[in-house]
Image (cartoon, rainbow, N blue to C red):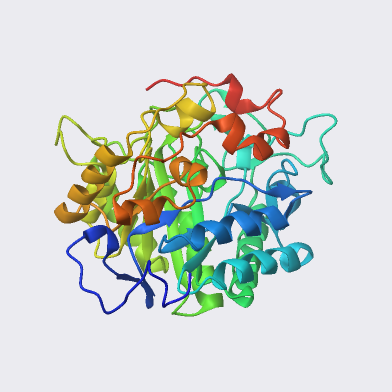
Length: 404
């Protein structure tokens, strides 16, 4: 979207918090919407022309931030299935096309998500993988309590992985991205360090508290900051819930969050992205029946806070994608709640995933109050390409306990 687009007028005052500007690190953002990574459009561990086209189309319709589909750093342990890209020297040209297409729309901010499968990595017969004999890596060789997969990382493994993350972040900066998002959520590699069930280490990367278990993610953030400079955005995405356990928690009490957030901020993070199954669900209902995890985080940091979780739809992502509970639209009601959350200072930006995939003009429609012709999200239609390229057979997430 060009700066003179009808969707953006930097000189027009607005009382609508959804369309007020903000700043991430030193980069201005035109409104409070972002598109999250949804793992679409990769083939052979590389992003496709289709990914560039869909992200550009959404960027042209209004969100302030586009987060690219997740990309793993270049390392044998990062290769899971060809439906998930790698961000390394061999894939930089393809990623460069994605970045150029999105940024060519105008004033959108682009973050590239860095993600690693960790213990969820499982090599399936018949699925292309250049490193089929390499084990999955995690802090303690566990995918969750009592469920091993792969091996615990050695000190050298940790160093190699950190270096790979830094290399990917440097490539992202060189391609023109405004920053990266470090994925520490949903039971993937860096989240496994945060979760007490999967981080049983007795060295400096383990510990009995969340802030202690954050050592490895903090070390990666610090190394990326040193390599990319002060103006580069580093967003950190984290969650309580895991794909293998919806009721999981990395923070048992809000008091666990403060030291954790401080450690990551001191390491160089300048945005926090809280992923929830429902954006406004209370984090600790017995302590406060209204306050979400993102809202608790806002009380503990001055950094911008992004959040996400089922905006516009009746069913959360996990129940929809993994458990076949089909959602229905509830966009207008949710937009009211999002505005209330922004006005209350519960968060600074809101992510819209599935509803924005099925409606690339979602942000434009919300701006105009046009909800009548929004299209329902159907995963086997709107994520058909991703489903066709992903092997579900035998995958660990399909064999998990999923308590709420």
